[in-house]
Image (cartoon, rainbow, N blue to C red; front, side):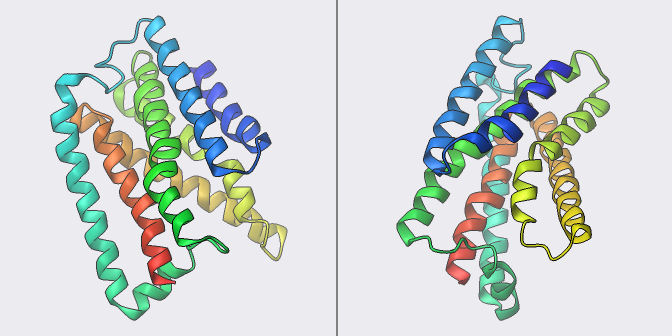
Length: 218
């Protein structure tokens, strides 16, 4: 479990930031890395069921994931219908990006290069490894802490414009705590449904639909 966690953190905070800034390049590398992680997990004896990828749970996971995706979509539509809501989410839209680039990110690059990779890596492989060594609740907590730390490099990038070291530290800490807390919710969904498809649905709702909503608001 320690080796898997260290490998994931090295990947996200050292390997990926060293790649060309192209979102497409990073998505391809993440997909390849995740495929290698799954192969390593299977070689180590983890079953498809332990990884949350068993075919027998696809239907249940899809129901959970689809429902959560719909809830997220409804929430964004409500926010877009209210001036205060539009103002709140417009700031999350990326600058200098065309409509086509937003669509490519939201519909292809984020789903494949971010959402699926993170869910398979964390709620699939890492959670499965942790459950073999820890009680299920502690496994969820530990993997969620690692998930928060996975976002360190992104947190520092987002905090570069902060006016002081204190604000920078606060921004980074807020990102890590927020994503770690989100990881707990995603882990609960994975355990409740026995499938990574459930957290994939919610993750898509927050990331991909969130990007589309922010672009629409702006």
